Amino acid sequence: MSKRVKTKYPGVFYREVNRIGMPGKERVYYVVFKKDGKVLEEKAGRQYADAMTPAKAARVRAERIDGKRPSRKEVREQERAQKAEEAARWTIERLWNEYKADKSASKNLEIDHNRYAAHIKPAFGEKELKDVVPLDIDRLRIRLLKTKSPQSVKHVLALLRRISGFAEKKRLCPGLSFRIQMPRVHNLKTEDLTPDELAALLSATKEDSHLQAGTIMKAALFTGMRRGELFKLEWQDIDFERGFIHIRDPKGGPDQSIPLNEMARALFEAYRRTDSPYVFPGRDGGQRTNINQAVNRIKKKAGLPKDFRPLHGLRHVYASILASSGQVDLYTLQRLLTHKDPRMTQRYAHLRDEALKRASGVAGDLLGKVAKEGTKVQKKRRKE
Image (cartoon, rainbow, N blue to C red; front, side, top):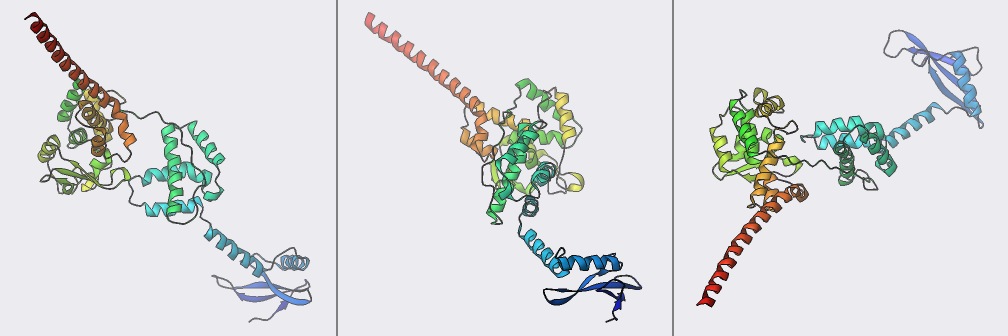
């Protein structure tokens, strides 16, 4: 160890040592003072690394004597305690990172990331769930509703609710202590096409130059599958022998199977296969992620309403045709559409009711005819 060199300031000296990460020497300043009957010697700081000077070291010494400054050891202990406390805190930001890692395969993760980064992180990122109160949620909901639709706001709040549920499920920390009030959504849209519109659409799919768009639209119409389910569909998922289609991860739920009807069978059997495992591959044979431009072009050529959604709307058409036929009950329709919640299928109940009314009307007509014939027979017998 190098020798001590006194300075002009009482109780301040230095030693020369090698600089950290650089050639040359620098001074390390120390202070000596008496406190509570003990002589203490402490490091004040390095000449370059800490920008320490003899004058600054003298001020450090005076503050230590007056009890206005903690020792370097106490500072280090405080920093360690603070780091330990931070490591034990499950902030919403930290929970989100764990949630992301757990849901890394989810198709909606990118959308959830955008919602989190734009709306949840600025408001709650550094908070713990236990520190979030209903008023915080109310303020967020009111602020978002000024620029976002009720459905969009509902998605943001539902993500926060899922993060809370994840924390409880994994036993990381307690979840929210209250139920999040969701905005009322009245935009459950059920799209349908007239027979003429449907005929125009099928004609336009044949005329379009895109190799997949028309077939994807017909697949949505014939099977009722969602856009993402069609993009993920692989040839191995179509069981031509048993007559079923295996659907992977339908809207975040467990895998399910739906029947392969004759229209869908003929469509897939006639469709040209490629080397890709996907039925409707994207670039380089990988999973397709978008086809909006082509299907919107077909929609426009067919003269369909501007607000008609080319793929999801055809799923509604499929469901509406089945419901209005009167031959399919709502439970069966729920299974075909792979709805987890029967309330989602309930939007087609009025179509089912109309079919039942028609069937009841037919029964009434038939019974009326029977009754009329019976009256005629009775009158004839009386005359005889």
